[in-house]
Image (cartoon, rainbow, N blue to C red; front, side):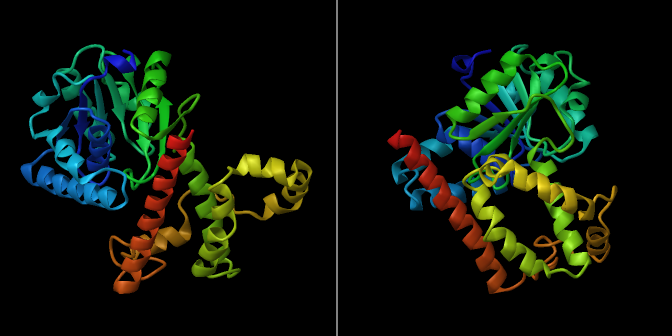
Length: 318
């Protein structure tokens, strides 16, 4: 299937990620069939979509006149039968292999044999998910980053049997709806982004555990150095600019001192056992209660929104 053959999008899940993917396709003009397990979940997703649309209107990304037409393109139902005419289906449900197997078996029984099937899993292996399918060659990962309505990246990850044409069409489709799609050569645990994130977090927590710096100090150091640099050029290009001989010398004495323990991180384990899960519980390394914490979240989203506006302007100027 080529991108011109994709006329209707199936979107499974209306939650944090699912509502945002549905919105991205509808904003680009695609009719979207949005499925979730209950009317309550669909209503909640509709509310999230409306909130995001109002945010985009305020930022000048869409006009007030476009709001209703975007909403009208999203058809909702709790019945998977609504997906029958979908040419591309993306799923954002619970990160549980059994649940995903059940979902995709239902979907495959309904859609056409050429329909591309994509999971928005953040780390489960696509080959294992696709193991229950009759046509695994049309299945792959399209991993959006949270918040999906603001973050540009989509990692496109093939399963063992994925046809290269399916990968190419998915990359083209993601770019067509305004995302920045990057295809991996092969699947790996955590794909690429989460592997890098896990490595950075592991060393950050090692620094805290050893008493080298506080969590706040670590965050400030990353925000005002690596975070700023890597938002312009990635770590490998930055190493080229810094001089590979410099990084080689650093690796000779520093790598052995970095945390390379396998298994669960002891600090994360202790936090979870104490019920300190971060923003979702109100307490993690930071307190997420009160006006100050809400201001941090709002500031993050505003900066991401400003970056998105800048990206769109750059595209128009090309």
